Image 1: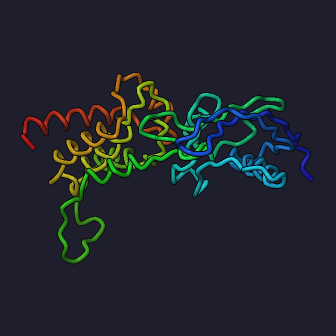
Image 2 (image 1 turned 180 degrees about the horizontal axis):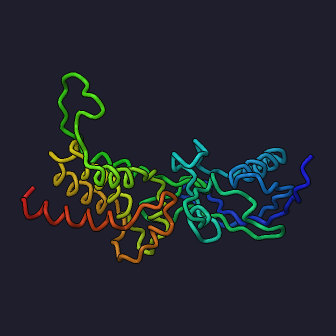
Image 3 (image 1 turned 135 degrees about the vertical axis):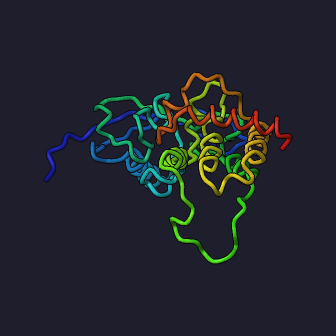
Amino acid sequence: MSNEKLMKLTLHVWRQPNKNAPGEMKQYVAENVNPHMSFLEMLDVVNNKLVEKGEEPIAFDHDCREGICGMCSMVINGKPHGGHKGVTACQLHMRHFNDGDEVYIEPWRAKAFPVVKDLVVDRSAFDRIIAAGGFVSVNTGGTPDANALPVAKRDADLAMDAAACIGCGACVAACKNASAMLFVSAKVSHLAHLPQGQPERYERVKNMTMQMDAEGFGTCTNLSQCEAACPKEIPTRVIAELNRDLIKSTLKGS
């Protein structure tokens, strides 16, 4: 039998029936919260109580609950994913809170991420940016061995660093301009460091940047809130790489 002290928290949650309806903060009490619960498990318990009372449960996005899919997009006490370094909301545990705490929970706030319901936002703008990047040219013959295309260790490391991006949108939520530069730069940088990404490299960066602007994301002012909020710790170095390739795409007339 665990001797862990259970907590009681006051939650202030953004409730919004749909994208066209006005929203407001509503207050709920989370009782008997075990410190070993994840933040989403705590919300599950609160929702179970709401359902038992015949009330509408709090809508929030989730899928893998392992910090991989990026679905658990919510602002907790003013910080995307709760503000702990390298942690998504689904990996945030209740031991980071204290008995009697008041916790404010909101959706991502960005024009390009319209609220669908409560804490759920439409992040399909990211999908359209990825689609704008197009495909990579590959030899459609037999499948090559994994090591058939040599990649320098430095380039492999840089590509993997950028590929760690899970597209959660925390960078957008943290930026005062709601910029998506860190996300787009990570996707551009990933392929820019690999042989497979070279044929369409400059066309890709131009098309993805144009789509980012068309989606209504703001401009980057290099204050690095995005890097601080990113649960995968993507460095702002990738933004410099995108800007460099974007200039080259203009010079090349791509």
